[in-house]
Length: 339
Image (tube, rainbow, N blue to C red):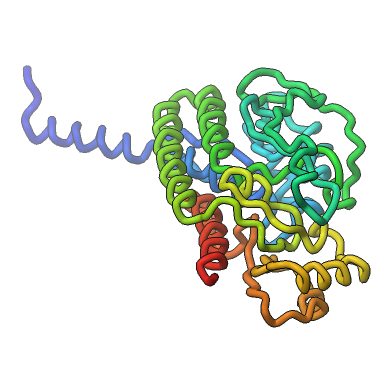
């Protein structure tokens, strides 16, 4: 005998209420090391969950002590996405103690990533360009890959020490400033998340595809705004060669090789001489640059603009990466537009 309509409706409402009350499947716990990487992971995870950011935007990725909450996030992680030990050597030991089920994507290790070597002098030029700054792949170095998704189980023993800042030789770790690298990484992140969380695989893959389209549009936008061949500028430290190589720029030099060191008196004297006897138009500084350094250059003809490879001024999340690169491109374009 069929149930009365009122009874059937109560059954439907009860079923709907039970479905609404039942908890959704939890998103996997994902940790990203720096804000630009966190932005890329956030793009892929939109609609599913939010990754944990390990290094606050205001902190240097070269020198940081893990907070208890950071250690817990790592221990609970199903996936950790990191640039690599060249940027954050202090992270290697915590990564080795992760749970057995945790996966690691080391972005510098991903096949197809465009890589450059660190330049070993503050003065750049044609001679430096000839010193093998062409695209390299990390598998030519000595890092072990588990597979093409970038999962990594064993770590080799490069001579990096926590607290040293980044090494002044070897691989330049600022590879996120090339949007083509970021596009490649989106695909790898989505692939790995789909393996960890197959119920949301379609969302991850659709987000990565949409993100790749957004980055292609951004790259075209920047390419049209930045005049190729410009070399009449100085940077605070040599962090931008991925961006410069992608968009056809070449700095005249850097104030310092590393953001972890201050320029010597001799370097400041050389910079003053270079500025006085060349057509340097702009100096790009960074938030951590001591203003006394600029005062020492004592040249009022320079246009001084602050830029930041980590995007400290931008909100973390899915829009962080594009906001960081767009601001970087606008700063360069504005400098050159003033000629």
